[in-house]
Length: 146
Image 1 (cartoon, rainbow, N blue to C red):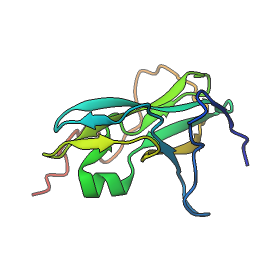
Image 2: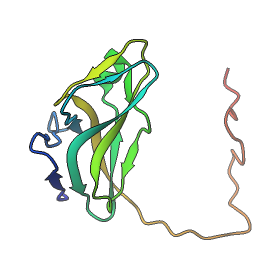
Image 3: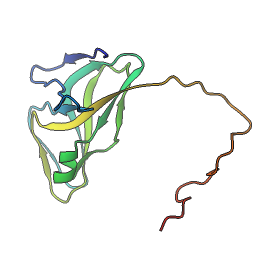
């Protein structure tokens, strides 16, 4: 188990919460002084009122909530949005309205979830050739599915 240190930037901020013991993500809530309306096709940067000290070797991935996506067409634009271990600023969520109707974000509303993942160190090595695979350099659409 890792320890996640969180600083509440405002008294009204709500700590992330797992909605069940087996949930991979922790719900993030909006920390607002007034509601935010997101019109169809628009983006809003929604504050959570929280800053985190994610342990070295880990990242936080901000992801959409399936209920908001299915019921209202609201998603996280840069999904997943990565919070690096050395970031100490406020966690904010970039919400996008994919629907045809306006959506109102209210204070305390669960707007996204955050999942923590361990990062494997990578060493980059420049080579003249890469190993061969069946796919080779086939790009998008290489499987020719109809």
